[in-house]
Image (cartoon, rainbow, N blue to C red; front, side, top):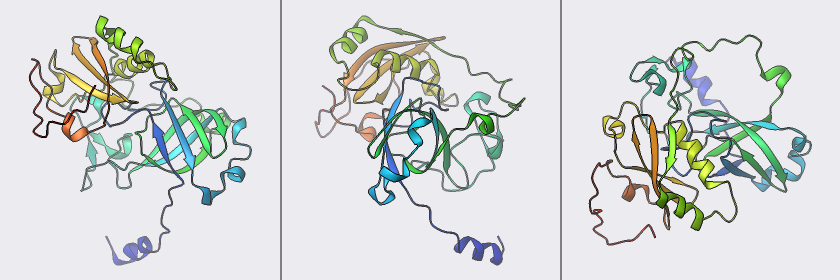
Length: 270
């Protein structure tokens, strides 16, 4: 990088976070890879008071969809990689700028969400693909006459279809869902099915991809346990997550039940 470019970058204005998303998705694992994959997913975006939402939201409620520009705050990559491994390519590589990967020189996200309601300082959204706690930098209304391209081409994507999983629920899982209904939020069964239908597993992770491996993810205030065999995901149980503790919970998937290694004796699931 030349000194002149560095000087120009040094003069760029800082980005300002206008609000932080409250999403039903609690971690990267289980979050849809694209917006609108799970129409039943929900989120709220409360705008900080210094941006005067009672005025800056004027007219927005008349639109059906909005673009959210966000910051991928959970990215772990520390160096730039010009090629990445999209899930659709099952280990193959593509240029980062020919992908929607979050691992970019500037980790900015662009998501289309359905605007359900504007109430006070808060937007109520659905069909989102962002994790709880995602910083949002801007909101723009969706305009079909300009945002929908005529005769678009999708490059390498159509030739690398992402197969959908069939989703079934065990008797225990159905009982759990029936007993532990969400008092205020989306249809839990539909939300789980929509999430698993798009196969949240990492195709490059041999442990996750092993038939019958026990996997789990946090959704709203629930911990969903499931296995995948062939083309079918089976939800075994849905527990109330009394505490979201990813570091503790995220063990390597296992194929046989075993005692949890919890040296502190803390109980996180009821």
